[in-house]
Image (cartoon, rainbow, N blue to C red; front, side):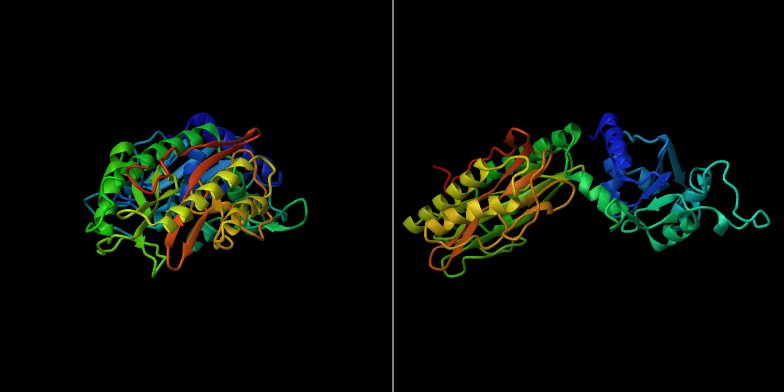
Length: 406
């Protein structure tokens, strides 16, 4: 999945953004642990939602910490110098509070974080840890209060950047995540291929008398088979109609009727990274107005795609898509024109009318113009793109068609 070279480069980039006064960082958000060392707890495993810890030192050392049941969930190679695995459940003794295992692990590697080598207490007559200098930065958003308390005498939860603004370690990592390295882009392309398979399968099952839930099962099976691994498939699997043109969320047992439009907008998550793209399919023969609405959204997508590139304002991308819809008589784009994509949904940047964001090389973004018209129905279309200095590479290659025949 993620590579050693990629993880090491992400660590180097991190240290370039952390003030030199900090000699170590403690990371607790599971996405960020994965980001820097390739360890991920699969969300459909026994240990789903359990939190590991990752300690990184400025001199290049790394230590992954977790209990024994959490570490057994991953089959991927972990890129860490030290793996501290604390026995929690041994099939012999009663279990204790699982969160305490991380504190035990921290104490096992105390030498890496309890002060710079050679530093002494400010008062030679005192031996309390509170007299030692603080030298670490904790991802306050990602660790428990129990973990934060364990290193509180040697760490800080925030720091001041060059503009004297208070920032957290999580702020820095989320900014760095915008620039996707090649190993991340490879996983995202794998997500795209799986998502495309589900979209292709939908043409075979979106028809009158079929329920939204049946479509979901058909799409999920095709996507997961193409992924080749157990993964997560989530999104909007809902039909709309001229009377109720806007619907979203999980599929229901509603059986589609002629004249409906089915918005298929979903993601495939592989190793934490995700695709997110959309097609709208007609149930039966679409009306002339539905075709016209589909074409307007398609042209809005193409127009906004043409302006993508490094340094382009996100507001400009939104305005470009919205203007096409307005020119066709369907009003302004009522939601975002797209958003960032990666380990979260959505991520920065946001393509909205008041955005202050600009696209940057390495961003992966969606474009998803949509319009929902009373008396016609709702249409949304979406592709995913990798931003480069030369413009943008379209990552998703699914067919944007109202019907199986075209």
